[in-house]
Length: 112
Image (cartoon, rainbow, N blue to C red; front, side, top):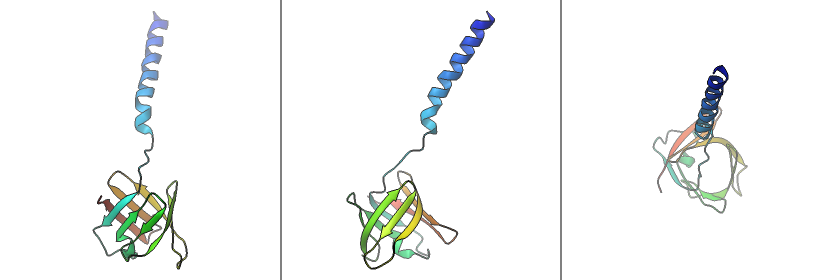
C-alpha cells in the first residue's frame, strides 16, 4: 500500500512538471513591423518610430534607413554613415522595449 501511494504521488509530480513546463518557456516574438513610442523625451528620439522589415532593413522616424540584426536580446542597428548601435530588447506581442544602460529605456507599441 505504501509503495502504491508513493508511486501515485510521483506520477502526480511528473504530470504536474510536464503540464507546467511549456508555461516556463521564454517565448520569442518577432520585431518585424511598425513600432511607435508615446514618450518622445528619450535621448534617442529617432527610435520613437521604427519599421523593421523581414529582409533585415529598418527605417527610423527621421527617415534614415539601415540594417538590423537580432541576436538573442541584442539588437544591432547599422547605418552606412553612422557607427553600429547596440541595444538590449524585450519583445512581447504588442510591446518593444529598448534599453542601454541607465541612459536609454524606450518603450514602443506595435502599430501594424
